[in-house]
Every structure is written in structure tokens, then in C-alpha cells.
Length: 336
Image 1 (cartoon, rainbow, N blue to C red):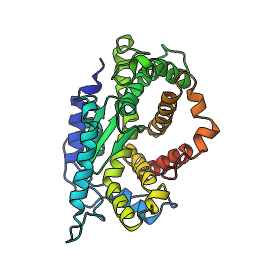
Image 2 (tube, one colour):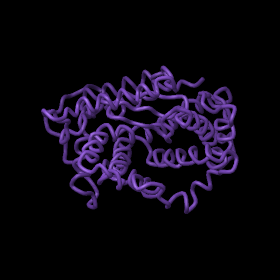
Image 3 (cartoon, rainbow, N blue to C red):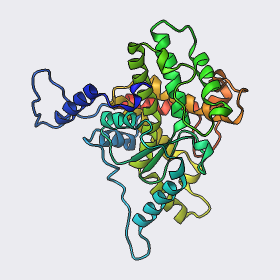
Image 4 (cartoon, one colour):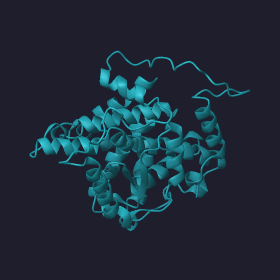
């Protein structure tokens, strides 16, 4: 198995130097810089709230949104509500959690983006759990990622690495479709699988290293999105919304929280030095995986890239795929 679950010592050392030096790595020595960071350059079309998000995500380390915090009053204790939400999610998914599955990929991403507030775990297959959602799910500070989506990403990353080296002559769509026939087959439902379509053993050392990096950046797309919910206190905002509007209010009938999480995914991908294409690709891969699970063998990745899948909204709480990828790009460019 490739070293997706083994932390890269060299990378960790470089990241540690970067943190100590406030983001500046010098070849000779680490020299403290007493001057404040320069102003963040953002596109002119960014709202003031988005600019504030970008500024806050420059923090070393990143802390949860300091402009929002739980309240304690004689009538309600929001800390208790948040703790109960976290515990309920943990209780529901604990039987499906996989200890140490992709743990060092997750840790690598936390180091790159310098985030630590979220407790992130991987479940074997969210579609087989009481929380049947695609990609990942977050309560307050507990995040669970869909292991089957990550298995797909690992297989696809192997195929992409082999193609980059010139040993594989397949399009991206063909790589994804072939991976799906293996990873999403009935035989592999509800259980973890290492790459099957493009096994680790078939890769050269250089291809293996490249695959680990591609995989890391793909996982970053979904992990950083879920972290966006943690950073923005989105569960708390939903609690307050339902308290004021029992029938559903702003956060029930708009995509505000999901849009902000997508924006943050773009910002943190750029902060981590990732390519923009990977978090966007992961969004398509997530949609394809969910659709394929519902219609195994009758769905292709090219179909996911079609007009209906890209521009049709399936819920008021989510923008269309095309808009979500644009939002990721907006966050990415805001950091740059």
C-alpha cells in the first residue's frame, strides 16, 4: 500500500519551519519578522464578509470564527446543544469509523493549512450508515469523511499518476469510470478497499509519490469544505435559525452555509499550495460517486459533466455543481 497513511517526514519538517518562520522559509536561517503581514490582496468583487474570512484564515494557527460564539443564558446553553449534536453524530457513526484510515493524509492537510479545531475521522462508507450523505458530514466540531469516496479518489489518483508518467493512455473520464466499476461494485459496498482498478503494486516509485500528492490535494477539497462548517459555526447558526423560525428560516432555504464552506475550501487549498483543479475535480467526483451508487453501471463520469448535473440544483441548501466550483475558484483566487 502506498504511503497515504504515513506522514512525509521531509514535508512535515518543511511545514514546521514554515510555521516557525511565520510562513517564510529561508535556506540559511529562520529570521523572525517583527513587521505585520502585508494586507491581503483580494479580487474586487469580494464582499467585505468574504474578505474578512480570507483575513481570518491567514492566522497561524487558524482559529474558529471569532465573530461568532455560543451563548450561555438562564434560558439556553448553546455549548450543551453543540456538545449534544457532536455526541449524537459520534454515536451514530462510531460503528462505521475506521481507526487510522487515511489518518496521515488528514494530518498532512491540517499541517499545510494550519488548522486544528476539527476532530476528523473516516467511516467505511457513509451510504451504509445512518447518515447517508455524500462526501462528509459535520456536526459542530466533529467531521466524518466518506471512506468510499476517498477510496475512489485513491484509485483515480493512481490512474492519473500513471497517465502523467506516460504509462497509461486513458482520459480522466475513463480512469474515473474504470475505478467506479471496481470500487463501487456491490462486492465492495460498505467496506474499505485499497486501489483496485489501478493497484498500488503497479506503480513505480515516482508514480507512487505523485499519486500520494494528487490524492492529498483531492482529499483537501472535501476536508477543507467540512472544516469550513466548523470554522463558521454553521451548526450553531442553524440552531439559532430554527429557534427563531421553527418552520425553517434563512439557513434552511438558502445555500449560505454551503457556499461559505466551498469558499473556504478554495482559500485553504490555495493556502496549502494545491492546484485549483483538484478541489474542483473532487466536487465532480463526489457527485459522480453518489449518483453511481444510486444507479450502478448506468452512470458515467462524462454524464456528471453534462448540463443537467452541473447546473441543476437538487436542494435549496446547495448551489449547483457549476456554481460550487466557481465559489471554490473565488476563494482560491482571493488567497492568491
